[in-house]
Image (cartoon, rainbow, N blue to C red; front, side, top):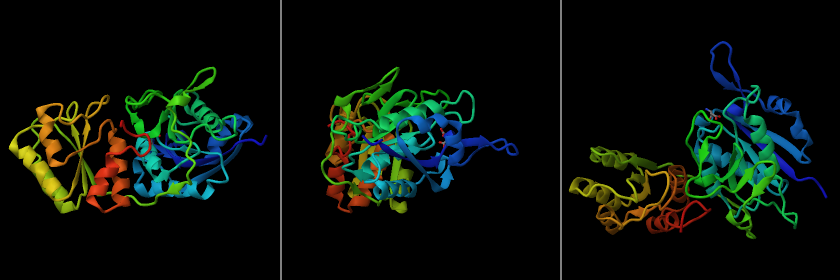
Length: 342
Ligand code: ASP
């Protein structure tokens, strides 16, 4: 049997950084150094190839253009590889993994993001374990010789997560990610335990790579005392086409006329309003309380249990896909890639 072929795509992030002795800050360095730090990755029984983006970045500088570039790279090399490992900074990894999960429709191979909290060259770095196990998971095959994982994931500190369910919750611990509304897909201990029943099913349809994202998206977190009016004016004059409201609890917001009138104004202007919750766990259930009943009547959409990262990138994807208001609403409230309940 031939060895699984995996392509590593290096985008930047702490995993490949070194300290700039002059400025004292962390800056990216090149892939060859990453591989030199872990020579054992060349002995995993995997045929490994690697490439890097022209511009290596700290992930705080990621943009939708980088997501599209990654999607296009995967499209170009899709038939040549059994899986893809993307080395990426952890800060915005949840956004990038969410975005790729929408851009790569009918994905039938693993696309796994990983990175680390400490640069690869440091003695206590988490990079070594993260990279080696990610490669091993990306190379897993079923009895028919097909890739076992068919979706965009994040692997970090022993756990494989569905990418569009993740949130970076800790800036210091090696265990930096959470996926509170969907269980982990696999766990690495002495053995790698894959929870098959939690994985997305194998798609038989051909891969469709989308390359359009519309960034006319805004997010507004409710807080007691919020004066929403200036935001509504700003959204309108900036040409915002979708506003994500991070509401309270199961999708609740104030019931005063000022607030409801402002939301109505957005909807009347055919600006999509998508309701997600500030709670990290649980979902929006509009109409459960009086404080969300009016929102349903106005045509505010329920984002059920979407993370903010998934809601933002899904909105960019859907706005890029269609200009039709009703169709936008339909796509946003429907699960596209395992990102939401229902
Ligand atoms: N600032 C870094 C980045 O996101 C942090 C990391 O790599 O984890 O690129």
